[in-house]
Image (cartoon, rainbow, N blue to C red):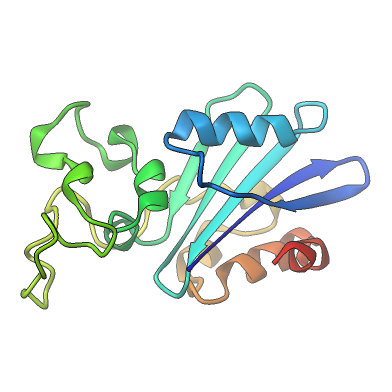
Length: 175
């Protein structure tokens, strides 16, 4: 199960809205969705979590390129929403690298629908690292340090981030 929300900074604090990602197929689609929520081109955060497996943060500041942080790239690679965030650039790959085809993964994390019998995950895409990827300083200026972000548990990460931003009440209204 997924949860996704947009937090847009305004003069009066943060405004939250839940968001459906069903029509979002690319990072560009997600960026457009977030920019539509922006007030006066101020900061917008897209917060995504998949149950207790992983969470991601996409940050947009005006017309700047999106900044992305994913808590566990390997877990995110096994989900359609995580796949949106795991760009070649984020993973340090050349675009079109044949060994990095995330499209061949089913949503359950197995290739071609076959169960992955390797408990260590050796059957998964070796080009996707286990652990966090992206801009771990994405929330530094908003009160969540790199160290704090890296130690957040996927189970309550979004609540912890919202609390640090002073937006926990508005996030809970859309949860």
